[in-house]
Length: 475
Image (cartoon, rainbow, N blue to C red; front, top):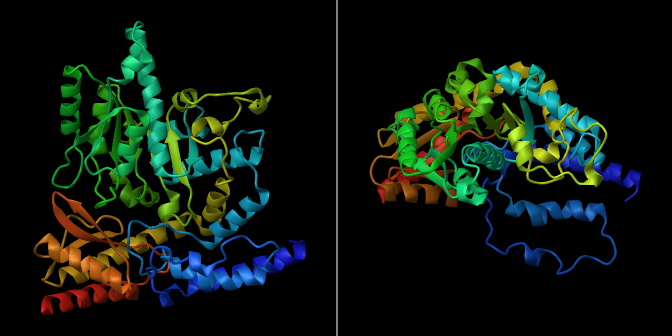
């Protein structure tokens, strides 16, 4: 493809993207296809001679869009937000054009240095203690991971390396394998499934702490589990405290669990994947109480801060444990300036990495802190509006508290009716939700997910739920 052709193609795509995003309400939110729908729509093999870019553009609506569930639609209420924005899209275009692989400072100095500075910006925006920040002059530092799942695994491996070294100092005759078989990690029974998977990847035991009536892990329950394991000859080494659970956006008591972890020399990792975005607003930072006790902290700007996937930010008080756990330094990756700034290949699973800090830089500059705060508050206001409509209908009930921009609700009665309610809602395809189940209670989740959401979208969504309920109850 020649430059002029690329320019025309890119301009056409930009126009298509704008039209797509600005008219999402006109599209059915949930894909209406069956498995295997796509194969008959395209040839069985790649063309011998090139197609034109106009042919490719024409096939987007015919081949791709029928199989898209529209995550940016104001009628998409499943999971949690996975936002984007025009500044972030443009940053990804530039990242794709530069196409650097920022595994070390030398590989592309701007890729590393912008990431260091942007994570200081963001850390200050959410009120992280200075011990986590590279600009503090201490040990602290941060990295952009792909997902919170990766951050949880990286923190576990750092904690594992730290504890193995500590135990070997007391028991020099113990082998690494012997120690690892005794290691045990902790998290709430409401933690994301990726925490359990991190334990599986790390080859360690994971004990799940029963949550309280507010679906929170409490310090006294964590301490009791630790004491029991110590008496059984196990070695506690790692605990994940969740701020904003996936099921119900519940908050573990970091102010209780953090001090317990410090008391027993356990690495405390804070997973704030979704809710951490709201900590740019001072009124939500009370959920972070106890953050000074944590060893690592993670949240996903790609969830709620208008940054395209993938961008999961992770801070560590002492990154050396993570770096040393994965340190491999062949001759072909060495450079003369090693140690002056991070070589991020040592902070993550893959060697290669994209220029993801560009997305943060563009978004933070082109929105500014105040507009991003307004964006968070607007989402939370819409959730309250939906909750009020739900409360006004005596057939429904709110499950738990309405935290952030998530409303958990259900028809009064048994689980079967709510399972049917969700199935019919999603079959109609006008809105999309998912369910959760806590303590055998099945409920629906209404998450505000789109930057295009307006109050009338909450009314539309509630009317859709109400209409399905009306039809069900009449039958």
